[in-house]
Length: 272
Image (cartoon, rainbow, N blue to C red; front, side, top):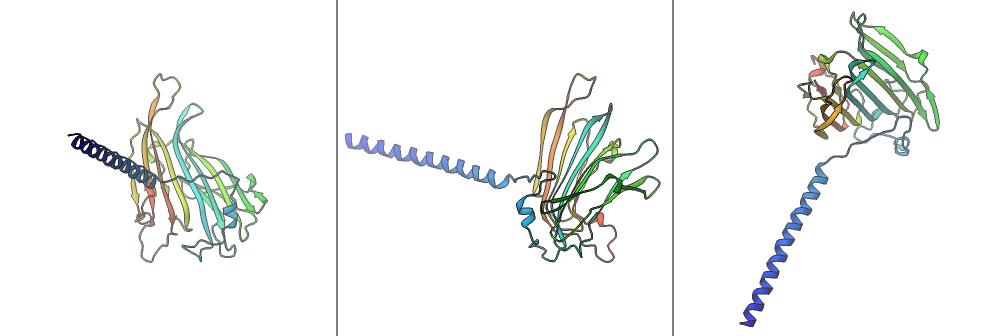
């Protein structure tokens, strides 16, 4: 009897260890899965290229490219500006030049809606050409505006002192009254891109349908509710927001083909 009792106790211990081991193994696999599928956002500080940025000599997926977008981001959100609720878009772009003689992206065009007393406001335009430790800053007098149609205009500027190995960096902010045309984002352009991101924070009383165009997959596709994210002066209750992040990595340059109707039907972009 003693031997049978002892054997039964040993068997119970073995079963317990196996059960515990399975639970631990499942937990370990879950943690690994979360780590694998939670993609890492990239960030960049304006005006401070990294050592890796300067060291990059070519872009291996497209070694013939004259340059590559190292990083770009757009932040779209709602804010109160001078007592008016407006849509805000903040853009930051960082580009590496490999071959200055073939590089034709040195002029930046920023379209904006421009009608009498209702124009979108383009503010805080900054641009720097980094050549090693030497920084050439864009002068405000070299920023121009041109009217393209009765309702649309362009802000234009050209980077100074572009050389082989230059890093071109710019940022700007758009303030808009037009909530019916919430601006999306083009993940794809004429240059290949290492990382491109759209980050949005939209109060819950705004509802937008969004469509991802093009055949490229999102590297990051995340959305969550953030409580009491938006305060409107004079209102007692703060609004909740949908906070979303969409990003792509290693985006190939878009090449327009003959007989292609509108590139908007094919280029990788998020449309609202």
